[in-house]
Image 1 (cartoon, rainbow, N blue to C red):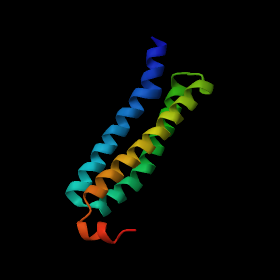
Image 2: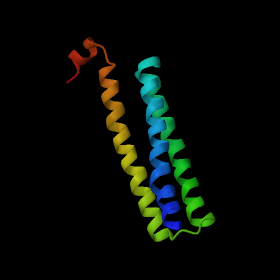
Image 3: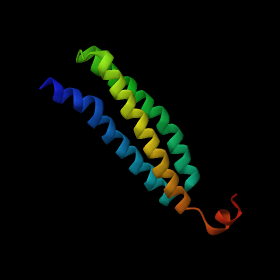
Image 4: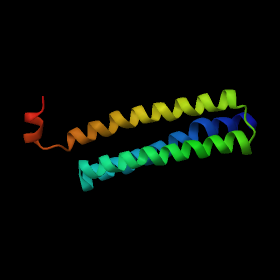
Length: 106
């Protein structure tokens, strides 16, 4: 049971949180525009950081996971979710840009 809780806390919950954040970002790209979505992404970096600190606290202090294993896995998942989210949102922002701006970009 402990290994399932460990995987839930270090992998599944951070991925679900990242997916929800990404869906909100894509929604904002198409409804409010790229500037608002970029602002949300900047604020999202702070909320995801607070989330990671909370998950670290819960895993290490409350659930007594081995920090030498838990924190690197949590950090890796957190970092990779940021990378995936950046490319995915960048794709949608480029799709939402008008043709004139696309033509003058280098």
